[in-house]
Length: 128
Image (cartoon, rainbow, N blue to C red):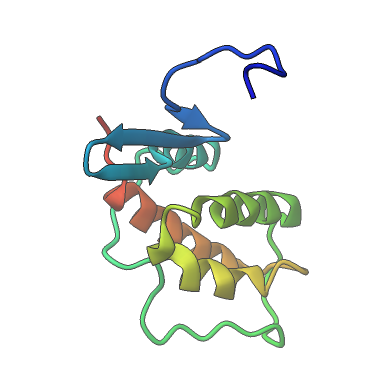
């Protein structure tokens, strides 16, 4: 290809679309630590208490429960960020999938569930 196109060698890939790439002799590892920390900071959960699970066991979320509504834009933004994060964090997949079902008219219980997920993220993200 170099004979047909003007090319530059930019060395090994280290960062791409918010994904940190670490290449070593045994393989490649991907993580989104900086992106996860950004999500926590933007949601005001950077210094929150830690959780051991991304979703409480036996939680019952339903669209039919009458509760106070929360800011839908903020909820959808956080869900969107978490959906991108699950590319390297499959441990969040189930919880984020369940919470994604309730983006229309989110209620307080959904907000509490997303905070649980963010507390788990805080506890499982390396800070340094």
